[in-house]
Length: 219
Image: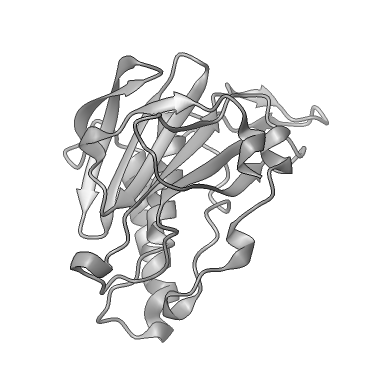
């Protein structure tokens, strides 16, 4: 699959449902990006917060995430009113296959599958089957990450459906899937970026996306 490095993912929440301060990044990394950032559109009036950016080997920013709603933690057993309501939007620069800075090789391309995989792994980082012993979570997470990779590489497969949502006011087709832990979707914009999203407690069907006019206000 043409995508960014599989070693780059979201910073997970701490065990026991506590938040990790390092999961929230300063706006500096976002300001270095050469592409527009996306978040939920103005119809969403709740809290918004920065998460982190991912960079290529040459230091250029390739993707990043913006959170909306409750800041998620690992609380798979929460239900009803205790269940967090959040949506995270992942923006991925649309890069074709290109030469590395030293000219010795090729850098991986990015695609809608890249956005789908990053969104899938992002959801996993805040997921923990309640019946599982903590000591087994690493093995479970590795297995589920491989599953997310395979699913993202087969967006036309039976695990995905098609969902139309507005992006900058224009109806746009997204690949969409649900699981017991939440939902994941991915698509492309007319601004040269791919958009992925994941969440739980908030329906994906009523969401809309828009380019962020001034990312500096998130600081």
